[in-house]
Length: 345
Image (cartoon, rainbow, N blue to C red; front, side, top):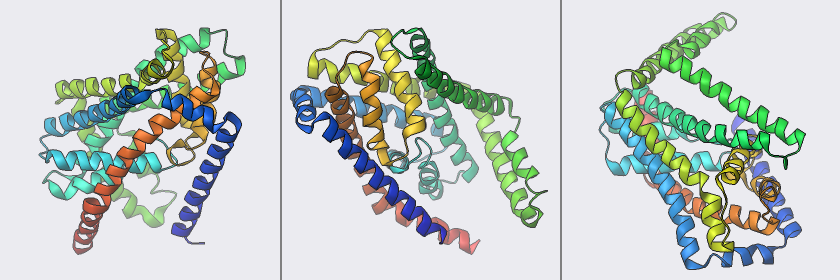
């Protein structure tokens, strides 16, 4: 079986599994009670939910805009928004959270500026890395409450420790590597030329390009540190809007107020489980099932938990549609042009 066909079948299977799980959740909870929770939002609540999502996405865009500017990369605002939303759409629909659309985002703008490709990729890596740092900042608070909470079973606490530890490990490794410019990634690629000597030249060329990108990332922590701090502020703002989602939804649907500890607990458990359960496009089915258990810890019924997930997912899908529209109308031709240029060089 060729690779594209295998990938297509794998993706189709994940879609089928996602809809199957969602159907099971709707049957288990009762779709009428779920939609009753959504109707309880009324117009003001729906606007608040949409505003929360739009503010988070806007903060992500502003963060990347700042990084591009401090690197001296001039792109139109339309190109930045379009590429960012297209990358978001691909990441959202890829059964692996956060990373799937980043190469697409880079390739969509690389021919619209004279900046080196390695610099473009560096801005995206820095932006995503700062997002990870802001997420860790909020997760660390939630992990404390999760481990101290008597409502969470020991095996669930072990899951929190493993998940948070996994996230912390890679963020810290990345911070040390990039801030110190140790070039561990390019060095690892160079080492592959020995056991795989047949592709020795290819590995050397790849390592050179990655090394250039690592240099560019290092500049974010040295030459461009002021801009990096501003970009980190916008990333933290985006994470805050995600952190506040339960409060926004349940304030309007059930007039419920969560305290700081509860919001931190919900955020941390949701993020940790998303790393393990984002195995379907958009976390379809898996996230709804997981949130039933998570929200039970703060005395929210299963209908409310599923309604919360579906409402935010609906708004996110509208943004995904905008990103895909831009990708298919602007990005596909751009990607084709980029491949054509590469074939002539």
